[in-house]
Image 1 (cartoon, rainbow, N blue to C red):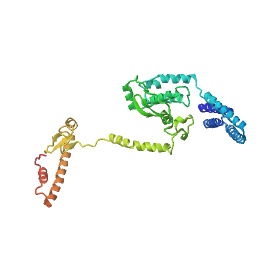
Image 2 (cartoon, one colour):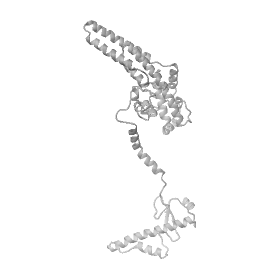
Image 3 (cartoon, rainbow, N blue to C red):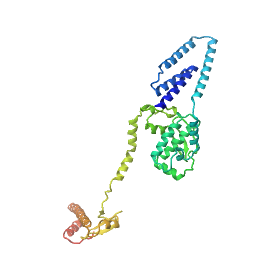
Image 4 (tube, one colour):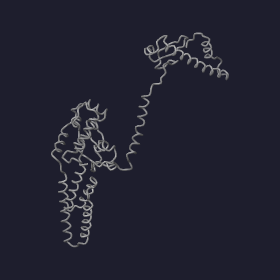
Amino acid sequence: MDGNKDDALKCLRIGKDALASGDRARAAKFFSKAGRLDPTLSIDDLMAETEKESSSSDQAAGNANGPASKESKLRHRAATAAGSSSSSSSSATYTEEQVTMVRQINKKKDYYEILGVEKSCSVEDVRKAYRKLSLKVHPDKNQAPGAEEAFKAVSKSFQCLSNEESRKKYDVTGSEDPVFERRAPRRHGGGGGVYNGYYEDFDPDEIFRQFFYGGMSPAATQFRTFNFGGGMGARTGGDNGSGFNVRALIQLLPVLVILLFSFLPSSDPVYSLSRSYPYEHRYTTERGVNFYVKSSARFEQEYPVDSRNRIVLEGNVERDYVSLLSQNCRFEVQRMQWGFVRETPHCEMLKQFQSGASTAA
């Protein structure tokens, strides 16, 4: 966690500068931040000194009266504002390497070039490139001019190339199409913009959070490697890791069911005793029972004439035919008993078939 320690020391230094300039609120903020980044730092004395000076200053200001007191308070406010401004400007430090990296990314317009990967790369290569670049250009880590735009470019490139469908669409569009048709200003909670011709709500911080924390806010994780500013927008409400996973599973359940049924083996019968789509090719057993199949060529290949499979299948056809005639015969007999019909043609057909006479379906 060397990166955390460096950030903690940096926050500690900023807090001391703010305390020296009289900005106690800023000092307390950075002391607390340093303690969160590196719990081994001893900041209790500094926090106590900040609170002590704050209470003593307020008490002195409350007891003082007259024009001299007002003039002193005005001078104190001016000194505080000047100290805060100088401290803020000094905290916005960045290296030449960071500036160069940001400029190189912002000059590129192709997603593959932004991430530094080949067009034939795998999704894992895209993820590795995003992991490396996003940490280097994240605005909380890199305060060089244009870092926010570079972070958006890296995030959008990863969002597109890590998804198979969107990557195919982008490859068809061509690598010379601009990545951003409009660069939207950075806002808390992300901002909408037009990217590669399509409008969508695009939040680079959300992509970063999903990648490194699985959708949870940094405070809900056990990792303290990174410190996020207001732009990261920690989630509100009672959402936690398990709740998110349950809701995601419920949303994906219909898709999973569809995929499950698509992989189940087909249960369509080989033949049908009546002609209906797609059973349109007629065959006849040796005893004269007609049946229909879906594909004549496939049926001839799988059930050649006089083969064992063909004999077994025709036997099944004739048994189904007898079963159907028997069912209709019973129904006709019942209707005759009730006086609805006078003849039982299916019973006659069944009798003729069982006696060995040739029938035509």
